[in-house]
Every structure is written in C-alpha cells, then in structure tokens.
Image (cartoon, rainbow, N blue to C red; front, side):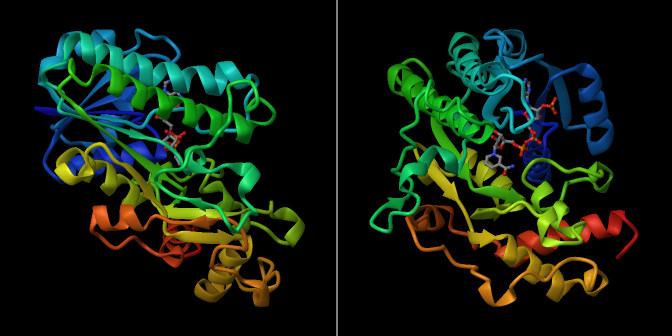
Length: 341
Ligand code: NAP
C-alpha cells in the first residue's frame, strides 16, 4: 500500500516524499512531466519511489488515469501541489483555476476509482486561508484553526498575493465541501495542514540556485543585500519545512488528526529578525549585509490580531522548530552552496 504525494517536485513536496520514505512507506509521486519524474527518481535513488506524470492541475481529469491504474494500491494521499508563485500573467489561469481544479479533480478521481482503498486525504493549505486581511491590525480578533479568510473569487483578483490567498481558500473550502457531501461514499478522512510562511533547507543541496522558491527567497534576498533598500519589507508568521512535512505524514497516521485543520506556525517575524540572526550567527556576512535597526527587532507578533495555534501544537504533540532554526538552517545551506561556509 502506497502514499500518493502530489507536488512532489516542489520545495515542500520533496520534504514530504523524503519523510514518507524515511518512514518506510512506498511513495507514488505525482509530477507534471515524465522528465521531472525521472529526475526525481534519480535524486532520491530509492526503489520505494515511483512517479506518475499528471500534466497540469487545471485539467479536471489530471488524476483519472493514475487512480484508474493504481487506485487500489493507494492508502494515503498527500496533496501538496498548487501554484505558489507571484510572477503570473493571469490570476484565474495561473492561480485560482489550477488550485481549485487540482483538489476537485483528485477528489473526484478517488471517489470514482479508490473510494474503498484511500483511507486518509491530507492537503496542504495556507495560513492565508484563515487570515482576514482587513482585520490584521485589530487586536480584538484571533486567527486560529476555526478562522476563514472571507475573500471571494472576484474580490481576490487585485494583486498576486490576494489571488494566491484566494486560490488556497477556495481549494481548501472545496475539499471540506466535498468531504461533507461524500463522507458516506468515500472511506477517507480529511485533514488539512495550514502552514505559515515556510522556511528551511531544500532536501537536496543541488536544488539551491541563485533564486529559491518564493518563501525562501526572502532570506536569500537578505543574505545578498548590501543596503536596506534591497530588502522588501515583510512581517508575518513562519514555520520550518521539516515540521510541515512531518505534520503531513503524522496526519495520515494519527487518528486524533483526522477531520482537523492543523495550523503549523512557529511565530511572528519581520525582516529585522532575519537581519539580527544573520548578523549574529554568520560572521562571514558581517559588514556585507545591513544591520537595519536591531533595537526594533520584534520576534513577537506585532500589535494587531492574535495568532493562536495552541490547539494544533497540542494535537501534533511535538515541539515546532524556532524562528532561529528556520533562518539559520536556510542560510547554512545557501552559504555552503556559495562556498562561504
Ligand atoms: P513549489 O516549490 O512551487 O511547489 C509547488 C508544487 O506544485 C510543484 O511540484 C509544482 O510542480 C506543483 N504545481 C504547481 N502548479 C501546478 C500546476 N498548475 N500543475 C501541476 N503541478 C503544479 O512551492 P512550495 O512552497 O513547495 O508549495 C507547496 C505547497 O505548500 C503549495 O500548496 C503551497 O500553496 C503551500 N504553501 C507554501 C508555503 C510557502 O511559504 N512555501 C506556505 C503555505 C502553504 P512543478 O515543479 O512542475 O512546477
């Protein structure tokens, strides 16, 4: 019996595949093209990993063939695939439609061909699905596992970040709606993993390039900044990729995680926190990157809405890594790649 992992070529997806293989599962990894599948198999070099090419998520039948052929052998599904980028041409075509169709397509294919074999379905959501951006400054508001972003298909199409938030919100809502309507037909139980901004190393050092995936690029940009003007302001929550991957795999295993929204976040940060850790922990960056205003470091949530994931921390039962771990682990890999460590 296998775990089917989508988005397996991505930053998070490779960690999920890695965690599954380390726990001795057989993994069928969904990739966009067979070339990407061949490269993934070569990287992992593990006989328990096979791949299937599914094409683009926007096609509602992208998963039909896979579940028709392998459905009876798949016990767990971890759906990580979704567009996670901001340099896009069309909000609908590049973000909203593939995110929504991806989840609808995979759920329909499971219902059709693997209703009796798939026992758990875990999908990657985003903390943007539980954030109401109009209330971010409101200290009387709490964002937790019960919160939802009130965005609409039309209102989110103003800028790439809002459209991304919309894409994740509609995809997660579709999953819960499908589950509610089909609970008596499909065997699986649903959980969603809701990470904040994900930092951390790539599984393979060879995946470190000049530019990293969208979230890690924040740290990469600061490692290479020479003045404050090079750094885009950012203040949000973050978590470590290994904790996120571990949460996905626990969610296919543990009964107490079924039917839950698991909000994985280690805490708040802003770019000053990143500067402080880089300047304190990496002497080779001293004098090369700005120091900013160290006395203004926050490492706590700035005044405004309360972010609370106490319930998830208790459910998961393991200690989430710290902001320092997130920043240092990412930086170590980049500096090693550049021969500076
Ligand atoms: P990533 O590296 O860009 O990975 C995205 C994965 O999804 C890749 O395997 C990609 O395939 C696949 N994918 C994207 N659009 C697709 C499409 N239209 N058709 C087929 N496959 C498609 O991003 P990531 O950071 O690992 O994100 C993984 C998941 O975590 C996403 O669901 C994302 O929304 C969620 N998430 C990420 C963060 C973060 O800070 N990174 C935070 C919260 C949630 P290719 O490799 O072929 O492009």
